[in-house]
Length: 93
Image (tube, rainbow, N blue to C red; front, side, top):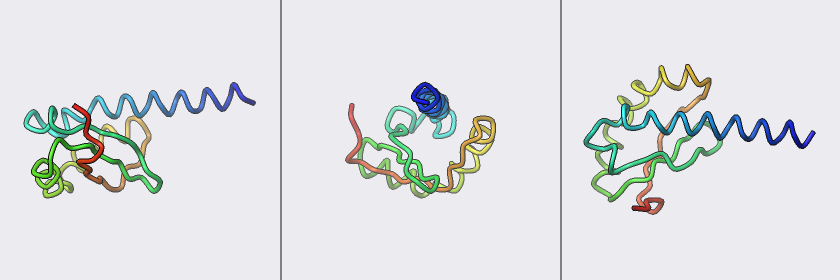
């Protein structure tokens, strides 16, 4: 039973890791170095760590386009992301 749980957690971690790799393509060159996926919350909310409030604001304005661009990657990884939350407190250089 423990092995199964570990395997499930490992698969989940690998899937998220792959998803996070796609962020640069989705966010674009301008934001790839100034933001990165931080975590997943319940209900399909992905938290994005942002370098500063300006980056968070610009990404917030592009949220709909970001979710549309993310869709093919999400479908290939079988992950549901319904919303993006931008957080400057989670940023670590």
